[in-house]
Amino acid sequence: MRIFSGIQPTGEIHIGNYLGAIKQWIEFQEGNDCIYCIVDLHALTSDYDPETMRDSIMNKAIVYLAAGIDPEKSTIFVQSEVKEHTELCWYLNTLTPIGELERMTQYKEKSKRKKKRSNAGLLNYPILMAADILLYDTEVVPVGEDQKQHIELARDIAKRFNKRFGETFKVPKAQLPKKGARIMSLKNPKNKMSKSGKKGNAVSLFDDPKTIEEKIKSAVTDTDNKISYDPKDKPGISNLLVIYSEFKDQTIEESEKELKGESYKVFKEKLTEVLIESLDPFRKKRRELEKRREVYVEEILSQGAKKAKTLASSNIARVKRKMGLV
Ligand code: AMP
Ligand code: TRP
Image 1 (cartoon, helix red, strand yellow):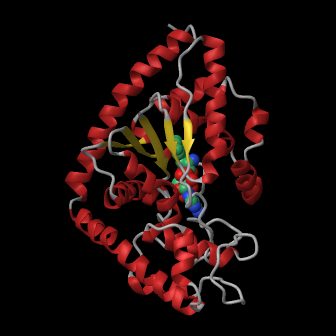
Image 2: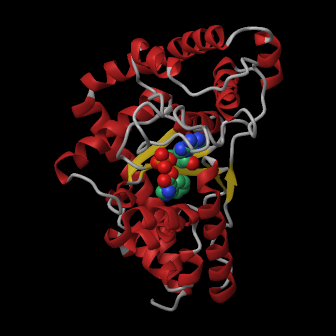
Image 3: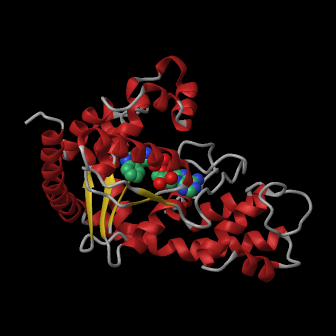
């Protein structure tokens, strides 16, 4: 199967990104044709610093590799290095009603936050995302729950194109993880864990043991000191249970059984221990890769872009033919 997914270069990767997206990416590497993109064009829709952008892109490539994406098995590349993404985005723009874009939850949230500084890129963001996916005849898109609506839109756009111009695009499917599709903030478990959230809301994939300990210690729980999964009435503890179970590779029921009768304090200590142990290899691998940044990582991105470009340009040629441009 062709698998495609991407993450923006800006912001620190946290355990929500890992459990929602990257963990699935790694699993898909066995026996599938995977393409993982650093979506820098999407990042331009938010406030960013041009001075540090290229550095963030390189850092994200290192994060992919440190987290377990194997360049021998998967293609890793930077979106802006393959111009066909913006070209297809334009074609798909002409097939997308504005109302559908205005209904996107993420657009509504982001434009409300930005108010006057909202931009057309923010509105068209999901069309560029659809272009990313459709350009590679993608069948499966592994993402967290917050991206589900965008994939639905990509499906609608693909179907609309096929209906208007004849069978062209595969209709992709979103693949969400069973448990970690929506990891919540440690500070306010009613909100999702996020790169741009309040300080301490997220554990970074590369936090050192002391920072992990502090963040888990200050994670919001509740007052009844009972460890059970009940996201509605006990959102804090339930979120910690999901994280604990995912990193221990066991079901929530198994965790509940294991922790029965324990205090929150002991649970937090155990969770801290599991996180420190699970994240340690990522930190080590990243340190190693930092040293090989110039040659090794640049080379992986350059090979990745070459491969992506070959696939993308033949697909664009087909699209142009179908649309009557050539
Ligand atoms: P972003 O942080 O928005 O760049 O998201 C990158 C990937 O991580 C996407 O596939 C998201 O769906 C996923 N993701 C982001 N935040 C979370 C979260 N709190 N829980 C689970 N998945 C998430
Ligand atoms: N919008 C996604 C996010 O913020 C990132 C993204 C861009 C993406 N293009 C994509 C994800 C294509 C999957 C497939 O998380």
